[in-house]
Each structure stands twice: as C-alpha cells, then as structure tokens.
Amino acid sequence: MRSSGSLSRDTNVLNRLRAAGLRPTRQRLALAKLLFAHGPRHVTAESLFNEARGNLSLATVYNALHDFTEKGLLREISIKSGQSYFDTNTTAHHHFYFEKTGKLQDVPLESVQISSLPEAPMGETISRVEVVIRLAR
Amino acid sequence: MRSSGSLSRDTNVLNRLRAAGLRPTRQRLALAKLLFAHGPRHVTAESLFNEARGNLSLATVYNALHDFTEKGLLREISIKSGQSYFDTNTTAHHHFYFEKTGKLQDVPLESVQISSLPEAPMGETISRVEVVIRLAR
DNA sequence: ACGAATTCTAGAATAATTCTAATCTGAGAA
DNA sequence: TTCTCAGATTAGAATTATTCTAGAATTCGT
Image (cartoon, rainbow over all chains, first blue to last red; front, side, top):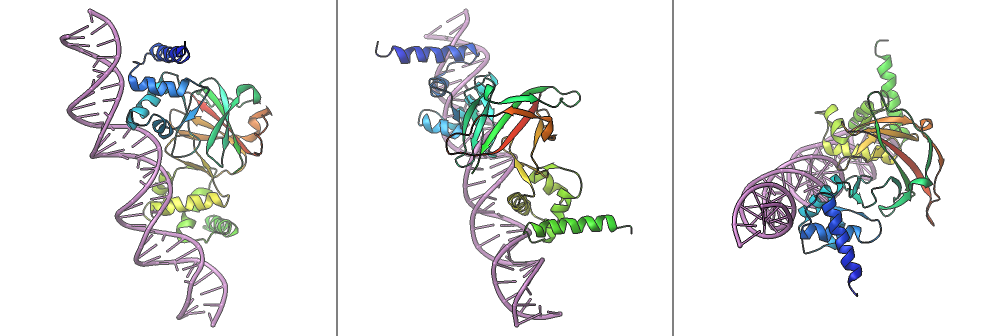
C-alpha cells in the first residue's frame, strides 16, 4: 500500500503519454512525472533539465517539451524575450507576470471578464486571447 | 519650401531625443527618423538595422532600442520566443498577432473592454494589462 | 527475441543579444 | 573656435537559448 499513490500516478502519466501518441520512453516518463504529477507548473527548458539532472540530455528536454506541446500536453508562453516558458495548464486561462522575479502565476479564466473584442482582420480567425497582467517591478 | 516638411520632421525627432535626455547623435537621429517620422511601427533589432544599413553597427541599434525604451520612447514586446519587437506606440493598447507571419498589429485600447480583473497578489501592484489576440495559423 | 521505426545523445551549429575595450563625438567651458 | 571629457559608437568576441546532426540506443509489434 505504501507505494500505491506513486504507482498510480506513474500509470496515469504513462497512459497520458500513450493517449497523446507519444512513446513512453524512460526520459519522457521522468519529465512527464515532474511536470504532471503535482499541481500546475511553469517551467523553462533549463529549469526542468536541472530538476531531472543527470539522467538525460538538454536536447531531450527540448525535444520532449516541444513534443508535449505539439500533442497538447503543454502550452508555450513567451513573455520574457530570450526564454520560453511551458505551462502544464493547457486550459484557457491568463497570467500574472512578476516583473521583479520573472515568475508566472495562473489567473483563472473567469477572473478576467472581457466584454468586447475587436473583429479579426479580413480573412483571419481569432485562435486565442491571452491576457498578461504585469506586476510592477 | 520643398524640404520644409522633412526639415521640421527632423527637428521634431531631434527635440524628441533631447526631451528624453538622449544625446542626438548621428546614428540615434537616423534610427529615430526611421522609427518616428511616419505612423506607428513594430520593428526588430534586425529589421531596423537592415533599414539603416551601412551607416551604423548592429550593437548601436540594440543600444538605441534599449535607450529609447528606457526613456519611454518605445515599448518592448515579447511574443515570439527568441526575438523582441519594439513598438513606437507607447500609449496603452493591445495587439493582434498573426501566427502565420509573425507580424503584429495594434488594437486600440477601447476595442477591448475588460469588465473585471483579479486583485493583484499580496504586496504587488498591477503595472499593465496586455491583451494579445492570436490569429490562427 | 527480431527488426523497423522512433527516440536519445553529445557535441557542433545557429540566432539573438550582450559585452568589452578601444576609439570617437557632441556640447558645454574656456 | 578650440579644448575637454562623459557619453556614444564600433568591431569583434562572448554569452545564452535553442536547434541540428548523425550515430547509438530503445520501444514495441510480431
């Protein structure tokens, strides 16, 4: 019984990869566990690489982050120039951005009410509306 | 009379630099003219460097863009990872982002009505709210 | 266990940006 | 005008994030 919690967590993570059509390799599983086993997270390639330290290469982290993003398991966010964040919360929502620390925090979709939007330019379709609330430096 | 239009434009640009406390050097004037002499623009360091080609170095373009931004003449925007945009429109407004082409287009402040926002986290102050409307790839 | 396709890896390559140290220049003082 | 020097410019090196390459290893259906 002692390990059933993490066992089922591992199984969930494994199934999640399979469901997305990603081969559950050792390194993808390790990364997916770090990403999905606990609450929602915002990581960079480097921060995740450091957590997983020793067991895989940085290129694999980049590959995995992009593969996960392509399959809808992650969302990429570009707020700070020069470094991408990846968000494990792929549902529609917004963000606080702490200018002081460069950290992100989720803002639930319903705390931001948008009562009107412009029409998309000719021939274009709105794919997503992202709100970033910047917090003073 | 023929050149009075561009003369006064040059004078405006020069005064704008002076007013911001920036020494109006030859290269800053050249860049400021490209940036401010016509309508609002979105540039990257490289695109601006290419326009000014031959008369100054890339490092100077970066220096100028950052100096201008610090003095409030430009605003930096990070939407695509790996490359910064600079916006000559420093008034509050939002953006369309064309995923297909990587281009930006201004959205007037009043076309986006936000009827509610979350409170800032403890000890923080909202410095700005940015809305990016992504247009389908 | 076998084979084919996919994935992983180290290290090289690339792209955007910043740094460095030497040189130059604008603007006020003389 | 000329002098002076803080501030600006420059070429090129350095740094940082990311992507590429090509060979080695692994997964998975059979």
